[in-house]
Image 1: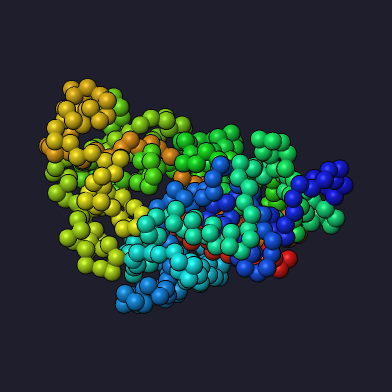
Image 2: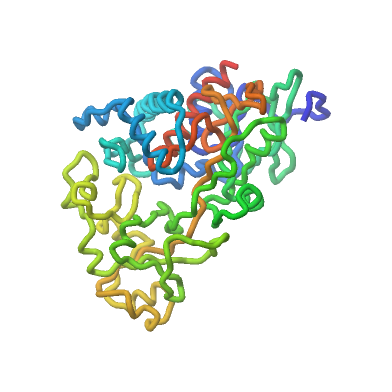
Length: 449
């Protein structure tokens, strides 16, 4: 869009944000705290985005919770561990940017605690040398609700079911607003600055296949993540980074908290089966993973080899690490779920017989002859999901979106999965920390622009 607009604006704000997940909410709060009027446009019917369905872990160093638990840590040690972790997935981090990211994450965690977000931990996480994982209590929805309430207290306005689809560009190439679509038609919001927080592109199958023709794809964990922010920005000359780098699909339960069975479970003898009772590999070698329900079955022998709450000493849930016995999967609040934590969950069943397992799955008893000894523990249904990608809009450390020459596009910022000023580091706890840290920085920069 150019500066010769032939329409009337439907709304206006100092800062207009596309996306109301963790990054969008933190952006809105940071901007509102600095006196800006803020309007947030959210594509979905409710706010929260991927943050609301995450596990809710936040990896950080030199935190008050670490000090209270007697955990000696430093940002330098964290940088060394983060660098080593990134290298395991073939990524070489920029040390200056990574160091800044680590320091900013600690500031963000402290701010979230000030706002009333509660965390458990710190919990251990391989390969980190000390406990750095802080988990939201009772889960990530509490973070969403706390940030949304803080935003509304400061006058932030939200408009849901409103998909940002284009950017208005004025004199000198400055972004001056957002064009969106709603059930009622086109909605246009004028802005002093725009921040793109609309998530990734895991639900854009055509784009994924063009970027990585041979990659294994699966259904997205969130259907609204179609790369809207990337498309809007690229149309006006924005640069991207790592767009062809996709993360492999993960087996996760179909309902929140989307637990991913720990890989060690398969090594011990747990079996992944489909609704026909056929045993499958956790990985998928084909180009497109089928959209099929899967169930993890743990027999009594494997169950006896798992960590339990009696193994924990602290700080945090550390029994699995101390005993080298597997947990079920990462989980909200407790960080690592043991079998005891699965009781009562809709995705868990303790079955006294093969027949009961078959009824849960919907297959013939005869198909399950080699499952082992009762009792059985059934986790599912689960599916293979695309959880994220490695690409984003290129930004500076102030979250300003860069053009293909490396210069900031005036009035345009990005945060969360739509933005990157360092490569994805891998591991748990860096998703929500990046969402909230990048949002905090983007909100402050957008107001100052």
